[in-house]
Image (cartoon, rainbow, N blue to C red):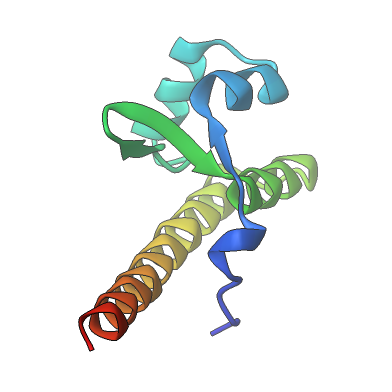
Length: 102
């Protein structure tokens, strides 16, 4: 699997900014999410975000003319990458806490 980039290189983009960038309505966006054609946003304390890298990858998929099957594959890839990012972030937090406790 490709190396997961550092969190510092992946800014959070609000759902409002993402919709403006995609130039689509909120309802159309969430229809694509429901149909598996776009990953759901990340919820942080009740607010919806995307990682900038996710938006870039999805934009490339749409611009390439990917069909629904390919968009679902890219969506699954993005969600899998998020899990890897979460795992690495948890490890980093745990390591920082252990250093602080020492």
